[in-house]
Length: 414
Image 1 (tube, one colour):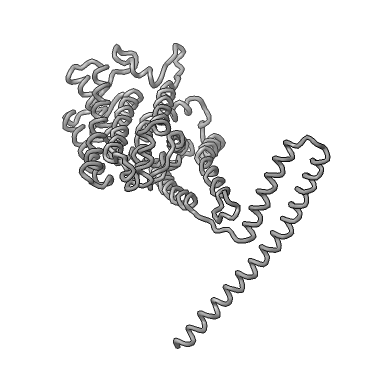
Image 2: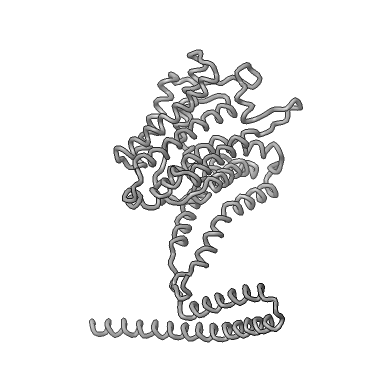
């Protein structure tokens, strides 16, 4: 890279690296805060409850991450998850289907809704907000129609067909709970990570979110891969439905509205940009756990339900504001002054000299290089400070002249 380049790429890289640390740091701080000040928060039971409440949100958040990276949005993931679960529960309880087939039906229903979203958005050109809002209402109604507005009850733990519950929570003989569903969630996240970062589909999804027109002109089948993102979202909604049934047993009709906000907020907190083209599955998981810790931590502070809703809304707004700030910093171009260019050149020369010093074996040459390094450091410190002062004075002078010019124009107009 040319030393006279006016874009400070080093500072931009540091900003991006700091952004990646924000979500993990926030998770640690929030958990530590509730552990210190919350009532009975720091316990294994609370940790299990946090993990249990993260499964279904975690699954739909992974799917939402794919969708948001394309520049879209999915408002239907929560209701699709519950619709899939209640249809699967109805198939088991009322239609006499075996449990394994009912679970497959849950996945199929979720995937079908994802396919419908993909068709409406990628093929028919509907705005994602409107299309998924309509699908949200359709899924709410479908679940109620199929179940005849009755709740679906999955078999309780210990029953003959409750084997799938142990996948998400294993109960030992000593009645201790082991949140094995975390392994399933992490495995799903790992597969999603591979899809996003190691496959053609992932590359095309990022390309579509970055610039859809450029991706199309590059030969990418935008319609196909945009639809695939929504299909993945539907499939993970089905997985969320299975996780919800495993943890909570009873599924009520017309549920799920609002879950999508937790999923979207978790994805955004984790670094997925609402403008598309950037996102991380690992970051999404961290964002989901932040939301789960808040849901478990606020009651430990003896806050009533309305306050919990209030603070959750604050976090959602904060997540969007964080995304705006992140995008602003990521695409910010900083113009270097002559002083900054001088300092950048000096730092580059110092790096080169340090590399030479590390490879040099002759004592006399080492002394020369060390002396040259000291000279450059002294010169850089002296001249950089001087140049910065001159630039500051020049800036103040230009501002004064601009102000005088504006006053002159106003006097002439009056």
